[in-house]
Length: 174
Image (cartoon, rainbow, N blue to C red; front, side):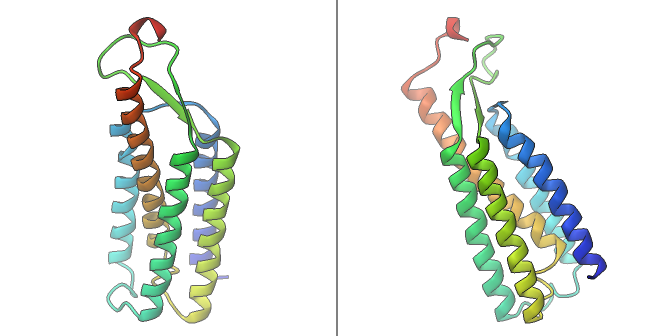
């Protein structure tokens, strides 16, 4: 095992724990804030990739593996957003920018998160066996988590906007 493989494993464990806890708890939906994490993760990932020695020469294997992983990341993120339970908040301060809904993905979302991580680890091993250094790099982990969160946020944002226009929450019901 290389130092990069150990660093990737540690990073994955931290992300799994942190996002896993977030899957199981009710959280207010602030769509604007939900975009921050994917933007930060994408920036970190792209910065890490720019310093990677394999980033200057992308092979067909790199492109194929990254495309496959991107499709899986976006698909699992969209599924998480679609499966999230959304409910009106029972209390609020009545401010116009206050969250009106909260969500959680629950155990199904956590299971999907493990599917995403399993695919990521599998592609990392596969990339290493095929000699792809770019697809197995740490920066790709951040980019793929960002893609997952982008898809999830987009789906939840769409669902909340539909809920808010179809059935506005009365001020007394908060």
